[in-house]
Image 1 (cartoon, rainbow, N blue to C red):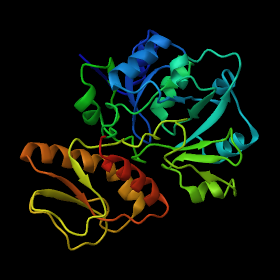
Image 2: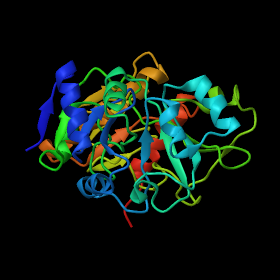
Image 3: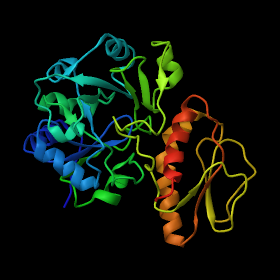
Image 4: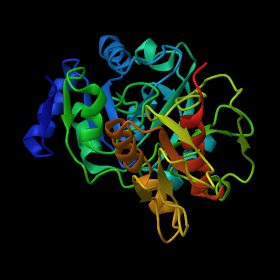
Length: 322
């Protein structure tokens, strides 16, 4: 049975101790809930992969509460330092070179000589990390390929009984989708996954950056062609709606579903839409299953700024299994 923890000082200490003993626990960040385990404990990391049914070739992001923690296992280059100064703590993951000598569990990096690192902008997660004083591997707390979780109910939906605990904090995921990932070990630096920090914001710090295609070798999470998927049909850029579909829309639209319609942002605000994205998809996924409907139709999202991050998630969610 998965244990539920509250975000009190005593229970945060309990969570840190449980992680020290090798437990894996879902903890909220400002992006989504992460399934945290001690990144230096190979057994704990294996438990993360097993619980998520995650492919072993898909590396994990390591979360830290200080740059001193990073210096134990990775090299902070000049480009990375600029990004850390500008965006940390926050929704940006940075790819760094591993040091020759480090204690990171081999499975975290999926055999790579680089590592993905982030400092979350979330007080409770940072408190756990500081108490444990170890880096935490923490991919999204869901089954692989399923929708990402932004509340504890979403976590329980696919992982109840498969993980040791959840540190509940359902008002935490203010960003609502995963972090942007940028590789600073290549020149020019390359965005591997769009997310909560836009390309435009990064270009204010690094004028020359590259955006990788889906054909790039997997170097970080979020590069799988199918990901973030509801367990029903999903159709993007919809300009009409079928009789057996529910509707997810953005801004003003004349479209509606006779079954259920949700709007990511009636005022057309991409930040609000991003925050609401996964929760809305969870609600519609459950409704489609309950009513035995075909799937979800989604009206177009502007492919600018944060809209690029939203569309990235929807494109991967729409990808058909081979």
